[in-house]
Amino acid sequence: MKILLFLFQIVTAPTNDQNQVNSIKKLSETVETLVTAINSVDEQAPRAFIMTRDELHALSARSKKPLTEEEFKTRYDRGVQRAHDRFRRLKKDLGKVEKATSWDTLTYKNSGEKVMDIRIHLNTIDRVDGSVRKNQVLLEFIVFGDRLLMDHSMRTISDLHYDLHVMEMIDLERHQELIDKYDAYAFTESETTTIPFQNNKKWGLISLDGTIVVPAQYDSISKFEFNYYHVVTKKGHNLLDKNYKPIYKKPVKNIRRSERSYVVLNDKKSYENVGGEQGEPRSTVEEGGIESIERRKPAADRRITLAERLSTESYQNGPFKKSVATGATSTRNTIQILSNPGDSLITTFRGYDYLDPHNIYLAGRDSLNNSVVVKYTGEVLLKTADAGVFESPGYEHLYDRKTRLFGVYCPTTNVLVEPKYRYIKPVDRDRYFIVLTKAGKLGYLDSKGKELF
Image 1 (cartoon, rainbow, N blue to C red):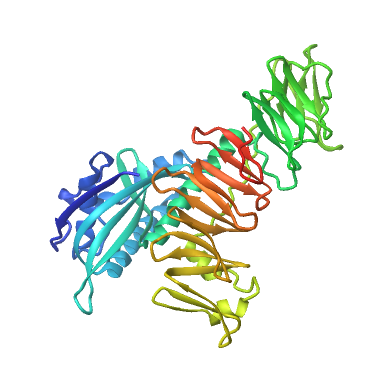
Image 2: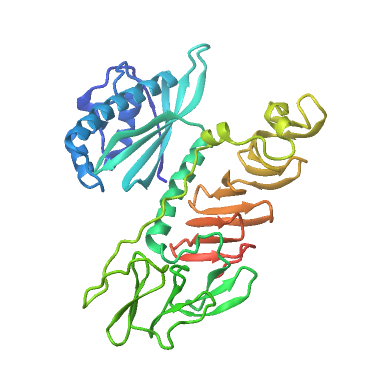
């Protein structure tokens, strides 16, 4: 994340197209153009950031499903109007801007396109009493060469929601990285009873209770598919059955995954289909090579924003459903938990900005911006300076703002995994964890958070 500080007075004036700068190579001047436009009398979004027809044609051409001419016209006209409408609403929400104090950027991939977010800290003047207030805006752009195109959200945002936005975008990008690099090897199914472990750069399989069922002797092990595990060594390929026994006495020359089975090339240079369910059609294989079939990629896990979470989270989970929904009171960083609305006091939490109910736990932030997980009784289970958000089915997802690495805290087992991984996902709550290391390598942790690599 690039962070630059700057300070300049804002002069209210119509936006001058000739003076507008939109260049990633000149980000400081680009941000100054945006701030000037926000405080100008012009209600339109700055023209330098509006997507041209040629740019939309180029973006459409490189997508998996290019737009038809009719779709193109509708998409372009609506896109331009949407950019102006969003910018107008942003200006209305902010009011008069006194000065901009700092800004930072976040770059990531979204739906295959490179996106850059610009967050700008502003001092704004209150319309009622004229006092100066701190505010910040988030503008999301498509990156097209050296230009930033207004085609995404523009809104005011709090530190809390910005943290969650960053976590969500980076987590989704790295989830896709896991799929792209390790789709065939990532043990992500909750019903699995064994997971890979690594020793001396060789892979084996270990049960969830810690028993080694396949010694670490393979260069790779794929997830259980078509009734077999696909394993590879320098000597060749093999398949392990559900009892972890190799089905070939000697490794074969090659094994590839087709759409519905494994395609095996043996030493006699003949092919056979192995695995899959009976009755499924066999893949056709031409002499001289195994067919290339693009792997079907599962959809990324859906992440919901904090705003959605706070407005839709089920409050009827847990023993104090009524008190949390209507009986909890919050005044000056003090939150009281009542057994029932208007009934006896259970706990008083002091020094908290918010606490959100999750079954028998409460998760939120204190007044010092620490992420916290507590019990209704008042017991503090976790307090950390890392950004955090409580995820279903029941763990606190942690994010180090400086290193951009992830960790988790599982309150049911009291297991804390400090943020040191590019990606981490508890499987079936906390039976085990799948991770991408800082270097982008696949790995696993057991239920206690111990590395199995």
